[in-house]
Length: 224
Image 1 (tube, one colour):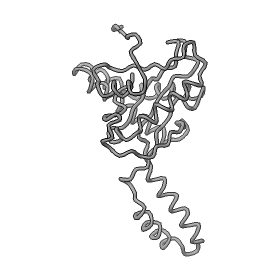
Image 2 (cartoon, rainbow, N blue to C red; image 1 turned 180 degrees about the vertical axis):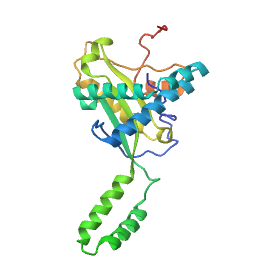
Image 3 (cartoon, rainbow, N blue to C red; image 1 turned 135 degrees about the vertical axis):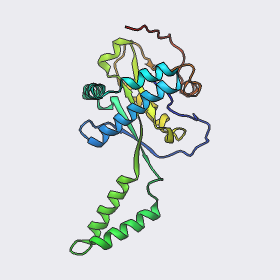
């Protein structure tokens, strides 16, 4: 299921940001915690925006500690096949730091630490720390590994999610492009990339149509 990758797809109403897409690192604690936070938001958004109170409660209730452990373990198995199966979108977060603030803070750090140290090294370290603090993981895309292609005879976008504050900034476009690049590299029975989107979610549906997706069957389900 893929929902709300972009609130305002393609209308230019929000400024674009520099987006770096990189593989999720399961050994990185920050990546792991951020991915789970985004996954929780993905699930609660699904329940809130595309159904009634019962659906919202069902999606929220499954997000237990056991579910978290099992889902992250499954992610680990998928990225062991191909690290690109889970790709993160990293953006420069101007809300955290501006160039002027960086300059001021670097100078302050250097003034505090320069005694007994090489000033150039201190300045470089301080700048690196501030640069790291000025980036944010804004979303992720999860493409199933090639070994699971025969479930649908195609590549599958299992999940794509962009945090609300980064929708309409080009993050969703970058993530979907990364998903397409991975799908092209997979050896597939059918040269197709599939995803599941609720037709009632008009904005998400329009976004995928803009990227060349079209209806291809329909999923039905029953309770077990």
